[in-house]
Image 1: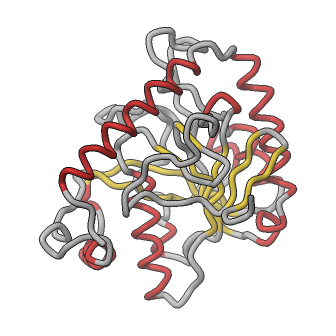
Image 2: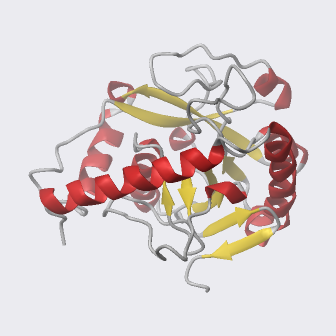
Length: 263
């Protein structure tokens, strides 16, 4: 059932309140704690049977900030992925990293797939909406090529190092088996609240539609979170979500593994 405009407004307000709550908490996290937690998370992800079976893996580059911890906002504090990316190459995985591109950079075929996917979530009047920007997951040759990446694209809000635009798009190849998904807020039920741009929710929806047409399994979604990003279930077990908000298959927090549907 489609969500009404009033319901969406209420959910958006709840999401913003949750984001503010966790962002305030993240201001207190030390750089050393982030690094330590990120190393443990990398080891835990590598222990997953699903990780061992995956060949093509989509990861994210953690956001670059001027100081270790921004004091005015916790929005840029997240699990570091440098160790996990390096380990993925060592484990023989094919690594893909995200680049934010204008929606017009998507092929007409992919744009059509996205519209069709959206039509299953919303009324047809809303299905024609296309975000102004999308993620592409682009293939990295090796770890050295990752180390050379720079923050060349600053037209969007998130300052991240990105692959060159001419790198191979996974949707022009075999697709992804597993995606490491970032976020701002998570809970033990494998729900997540992102940072409000919808890049990953839209990309996952697009990839699922592509997978169906290519007769391939949809990629497994693995979230990774700092302990401080976990939503307090004593307050409310459920994070606010809309139809397009993707639920993770697995969430890794330190050495703890949560699985969707297993409580």
